[in-house]
Length: 155
Image (cartoon, rainbow, N blue to C red; front, side, top):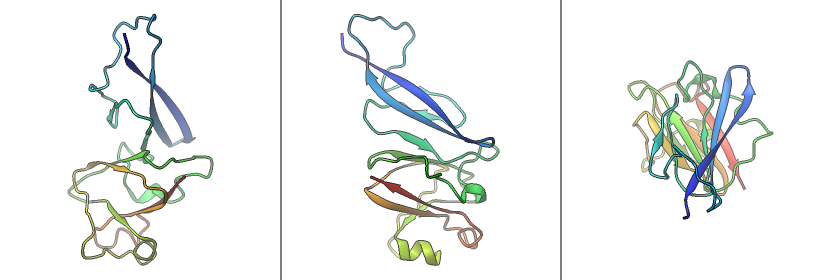
């Protein structure tokens, strides 16, 4: 019988921030796992991470008071984290106050939102990383300039 189980790895980035990664692996067909998580189930943590049988890793943007997308993300990710194209960034935030806008480098540096930009507003957004540097800003007026922006490079 073929199946999937998820190996969760907690990577402590600092005393106040944790990144949780989930990587899926096949289990050995002769081992029986009681109470294992099926690939379509959702495991509830703070914040939640959906489990999917793939090689991509969901990365939680570092949490500050259980809110991941906030003004204190400057300096993340640290240089010791390696992202792969296809990995998923998970942004959890108060959707009444913030949003997430993927932008190019020029708009990132200028804190500007292009006319045809995709604006994520759910408060629990999962964005697949593309090869190269991925730039994200908060589109709420004044938030990007105040430091609510990150750049993540995926190989």
